[in-house]
Length: 107
Image 1 (tube, one colour):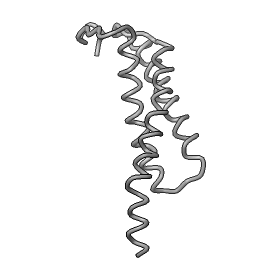
Image 2 (tube, helix red, strand yellow):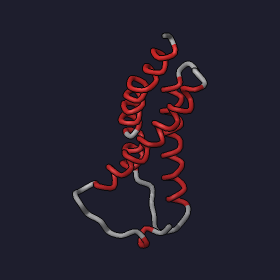
Image 3 (cartoon, helix red, strand yellow):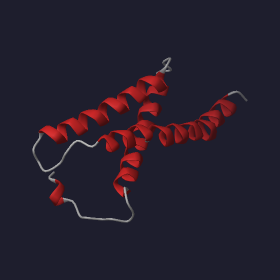
């Protein structure tokens, strides 16, 4: 979608970076949730690499697509930083729900 089709919402400077962080936090949480089911080693590092690679790929596609959008290194950085809240929410989920399942099945 061309950048001109998006509404101009300027809540505060770099608001779009917060949007990037939130979107990639959701992506990170979902990947951690799915990957945890498989109980693989180093899943956090692999998922961080996936998040970085996907964010970088999206920025490269924006640059080469000629749709009025361009590559932004700050967007890539915000995407990677989105991993942190995603990881924290996932750890909270594990603490609140997964541990309760283990406790209830051991009785």
